[in-house]
Image (tube, rainbow, N blue to C red):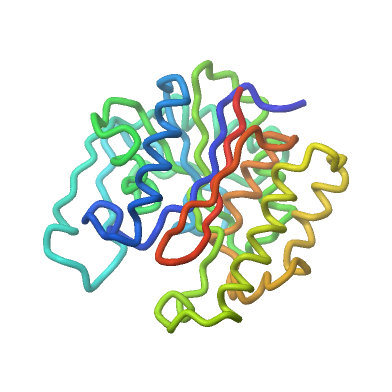
Length: 267
């Protein structure tokens, strides 16, 4: 079984920089805006962000979630952004039940707000803030199989018009972002990105082969250089678990000087 939702994995960039007109995020902003035009306007949005890890899968269930400015050292306007989209408590309940019905320990949190992995890309894609949204956490331990299982459990959701966004970053070596570009860093970035493109887009792979690649992602070329810690990759595992097939489209805009993958599965 595969999903009836539109599914999008995005590389969400560095903190609030995409909203500040940063030159290193121009291609990313354009790419997100193009995706928003390709996808029918969602009835609701579920975001799995790299910036929330919990001991068990947890979904925001508040009616009017606040924003969490989970970054530091940026201009003062970075802490005044608003994204007053409504929450979706009924959808949150459906998500929690879908997970528990699949044997996954899950909870809801009516107090938690949305971190920048949620509000930054949504502010770019849907600036009117008129679409109900919920956020689902990652699970501590960051196990690849566990996160694919989250996606598989969400296949039972019956919510027409739902958009599921995995908000991570296909390259997330913070030292490399701030180091001088070298041929070695560029080659590592491109080698892993090429592997990721093939894994997500190659229709000649069987789903068993694709699943095995996601399971053993750390064996990919330069995987641990690109992801010293895997939290920014796990939202992609949730997306694939939900989609259970090759993506329909991929792109790799340059973000902060690094090729950064984005993948769309159409309903």
